[in-house]
Image (tube, rainbow, N blue to C red; front, side, top):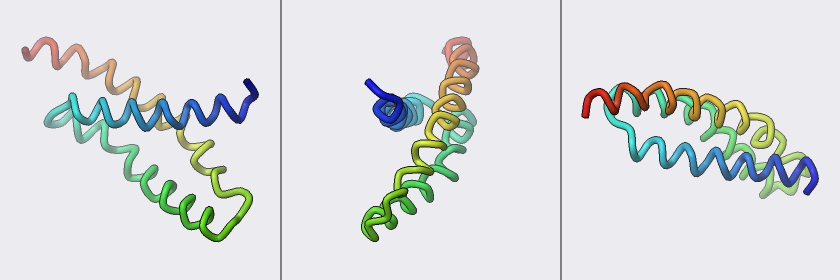
Length: 88
């Protein structure tokens, strides 16, 4: 497995983690977990546009931004996990 494959796995991990976190969160926690979408949705749209235009660097922003977004979602999920359990 090379570096690019690992980076694509991180992109997939981000998408799945973001979706699961948003489904399981509520209230203020859901808002906090949705913050990366402000950046990631335009990045995915830009990548789609560049892909259609057959630009060879279309995935670069996805590959660079996804690890940061994944780290954010994981950290916020872990921090809010305790508050969700105390409320239940």
